[in-house]
Length: 170
Ligand SMILES: Nc1nc2c(ncn2[C@@H]2O[C@H](COP(=O)(O)OP(=O)(O)O)[C@@H](O)[C@H]2O)c(=O)[nH]1
Ligand SMILES: [Mg+2]
Image 1 (cartoon, rainbow, N blue to C red):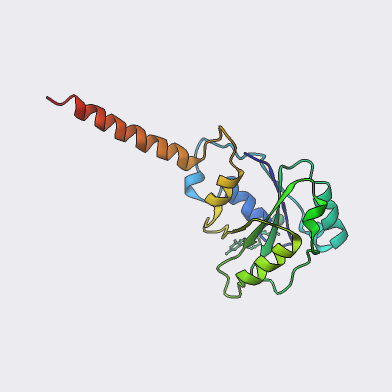
Image 2 (image 1 turned 180 degrees about the horizontal axis):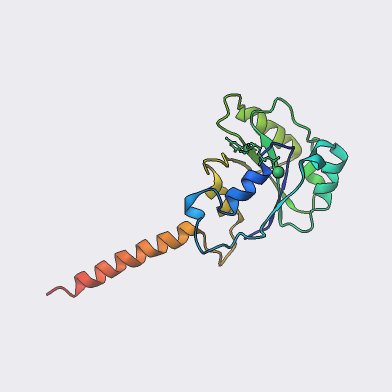
């Protein structure tokens, strides 16, 4: 898995998303295949509340393969500076959280993230797990197995077995 560093204000949902990505919240991640341990770097929200520190976080993101900029869809403003992505030597993706909040404004959140220079934007509800598989699939590298890959493999194996058994019917 690619290692992702999560950046965002306090309450954006960094810790909840970390748990969702590590499989602590959603059932199909409760498996022995814990490939995602240490593949998420949670950062303190305070860094993001100071624009200079937010920039520093993005510049010094060497520990990660990808930086995820979080925006809570229900927040009425964004602290990210335009084009902040150009400062990073890493790929930066946008992640909109709290997508089902009654005040959620997805186009507004997406616009803020686009203004930072993010090309790819994911939409998640880290509490229900919605959008998490898409994000994990994006972080997946050759040779990684996601829980549903394993389930799929088992289903295929089961199906093949049945076909095989059928072949041996008199
Ligand atoms: N419904 C919903 N609640 C969320 C989501 N992400 C975070 N929360 C809630 O928002 C609050 C703050 O989240 P937390 O992960 O601690 O934010 P952090 O300060 O960025 O680490 C917690 O009560 C979470 O349960 C989300 O995607 N959907
Ligand atoms: Mg936190």
